[in-house]
Image (cartoon, rainbow, N blue to C red; front, side):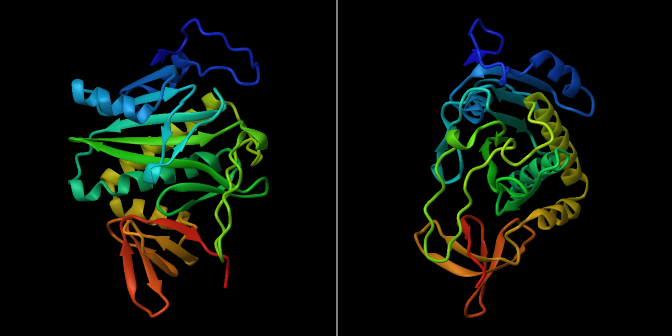
Length: 285
């Protein structure tokens, strides 16, 4: 893990490094975060915080951000990467006081925080359950961010990857469509027409939104659930859910229950609550 500001050259003036000291001044302190570190590059910010939490007492509210993440991880074991300083890779370690069965809401509210931040940048975004952030337009629609939450003892690491200035050529090709399915291509804030693609600005907006959503969840879980439902594009949509055991469930996404599970009504009318699944939005039928 290389510390930000190390003697490593960068030549792309359109993609400067994050500025650690101004970020700390703006975000660390009472009502904000406990600590914030920026590194030039690493394999995975989530993995780094998880490893640190095993060998030392990492403070609740510790933030780690990388200018370049070479081995980012997503849900279901997927990996992703992006050009240096083109996106944000940010992980936050929290030590929730709430009972463990409520922790399933943490990745969901993290997705809501990303949507909150993007709304302030003029980007119309919503969530594909559980926490993929999709841009709806008017620029290039598609997936702009994903969230991965991982538990280590009494701590949870909330990781978010956000595409900021990637060009169409720098993003992965669109996923292949299957019968009736409409997988979302990747996009970036630049392609979506965001009012700002300054990564310091985007990071500040996101971390402030995440702090607000975490505090809301601790004080009023019902408000957090309502905010998630309002932002969730999956609800009311025909979906295909690929289940961990290999089965496939087609139906309509009806609700998100008290534990954050997606409730799908199948063609026969039976309702199934999904705690884990790879969900694809189907074209309207």
